[in-house]
Length: 100
View 1 (cartoon, one colour):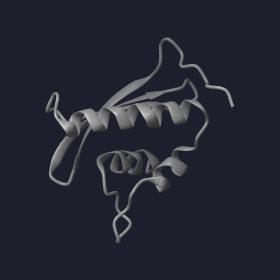
View 2: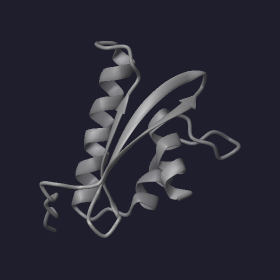
View 3: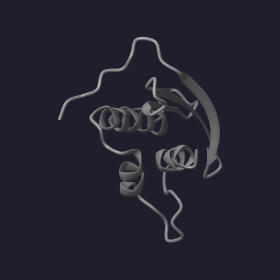
């Protein structure tokens, strides 16, 4: 399995979303064909465990996407509540992206 390199110039969008009463800012980078290539997430509280864990998890998801993991497979693998909603902010972000 080979990593698909990111183009030097790529579409990037920034969105804000709320999960469990916390506001997050997410960056989504895309390949030229529109597929999600990378995600970034920030909780706005620099240096906190929440910010560091979110950033590191987003990097891991981005690497998976670049190696060809389907976004829906990653989304379904993340922790879910009994009602099927995302337990964490990255699952919530991937739910938003899946709904596009």
